[in-house]
Amino acid sequence: MALCYKNSMKITRDEVKRVAALARLELSSEEEAALTDQLDKILQYMEKLGQLDTATVEPLTHVVEMVNAFREDKVTAPSSAESLLSNAPALEKSFLKVPKIIE
Image (cartoon, rainbow, N blue to C red; front, side, top):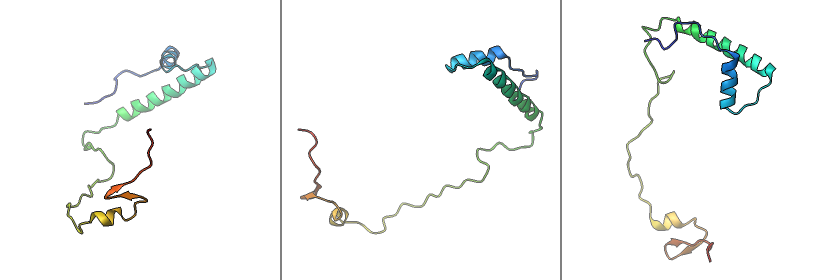
């Protein structure tokens, strides 16, 4: 199923003004003319792409083959609380001691 228009797409200056207003952009008349021309060229190119035969092309989500790098979740060396807390700046019993921030 082709997702392109059969008619020739041509963007008008009024359409550019409307989109600019929706985007809250203030464009000068020169900028409107330049954008109209640029957007029209983009639409012409899209029409050209729409003429390609893609019936035998498989749909894809990525250009290169993607493989998940999952591994089995295994416990290799159990850690003790003492070894995990050894780098803490301050301890109180088996808890991290932090500065008081609320009075």
